[in-house]
Image (tube, rainbow, N blue to C red; front, side, top):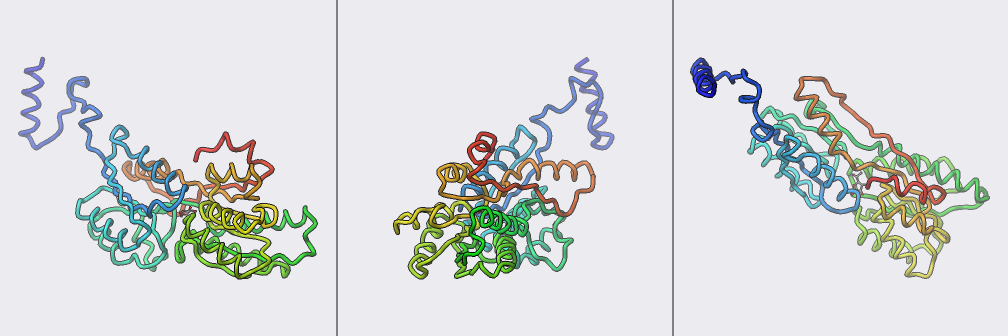
Length: 330
Ligand code: GYE
């Protein structure tokens, strides 16, 4: 049998490189012999708990056992590094390029290069602003504008419930990386929502680069400049953690003297809500690895994919944090 198989295989090869498909157990390629799908992931950096969970989601999804070879690049929050990484992926002729773009603009040239090389580009997490939408296949991530709006809606309800309706409330905003779609959407949602109530006064907004250290630093300067701050919007949890330290350092109680509304809803933020230090947290789901894998599998099968795919997200607060924590995956 073996000899016969070998002979047919040789004939098939001579006949034109056709893969021999007879005799199931003998000839079917083993999982390890199948061609792996090579995916280059241009990641933003490692600036936050959210980002760590996102990286982990990609690394645990795009494994050899699952049929992938992942080339992972950490851009340390710099667009120029991401552009370099994408050029490297093109040079290595990867099958797919995935990008979580640091900022929204400035991608036309490098994406045109990927297009010319025939490599599909999938955007994940943050979006790009492009004149030519054909430069990427699709995008999957959170609805940042809605997140900003939801944060203000939560504040409106809180104000109503706690009899603060007739009080003027001074607000400061710790923004994410300026020009990132996560910052742009959240800030827009916050400002538009806050503008609807003349009792909300936005004292200042400044970037804390989505990091705990910078969030603390900016909050310290806000506390020095403004003696009465009532509400902080922190555009991610790590900046909220930094703000909490800054508030404690001036002898005030985070969550009580100053209302803190944050974004992401990572594990540690739930602990802080349980401790009463963060009042509310707008969820942003980082577990995009399996979502991107599903997109790639559809593309491999020649199926159409939706261009824009929003992930459903909730809002949590001190009232349900304890009950929800055990169900949280990041
Ligand atoms: O909120 C923040 C991270 O782009 C949604 O980036 C993401 C944001 C997330 O650094 O923690």
